[in-house]
Length: 222
Image (cartoon, rainbow, N blue to C red; front, side, top):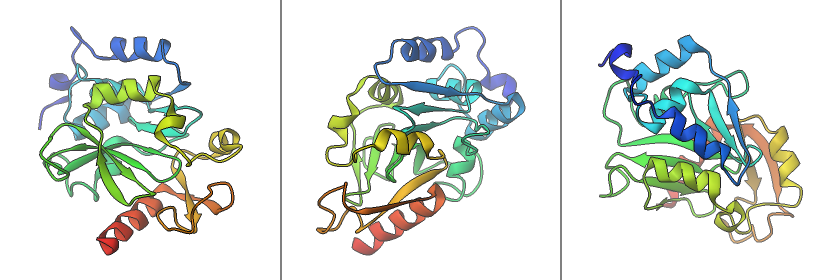
């Protein structure tokens, strides 16, 4: 594994690019503060350089909250969002740090959707992002790499990306939702009974439970 000194790029860091995009973003972006020692550890565990935009976000932030926290982009963790990108993936996409990952979870949303970089498991387009849609129980190719995904989060009208999945008053609910939690719904979003997001029951539960349940449900459904 590469050392911290090999991963920190002081000549051409990626953070100024990300910060410029955030400053110009159409959607609200909150930068969560990071703790230096944890950021360094997360960078080593992920094995990406700070020249890359992912490495820059890990090294410079505890994560990013998009559109009142509807989307949570993983960094090196903070008091508000305790998950780090490598720790969140360990036991899901790989067993030990430094192993090749079939996919890498990089973000998720308030309704139990997950964004992942394809490492070869999700399709032939290695390096591109996929979205696990909780209303379909399948991974959807987004045909974009990580840098374009950041711009998607910053610039896209997310109402158009999430049609029928945002209820009346979602803004305040999501602002109050802890970023390590997501909503579970009943009837489940993928069932025929879940026709109106405003009338189905929702409860905030740990994102770990949401991930496990959604992956298990996908495997059962086939």
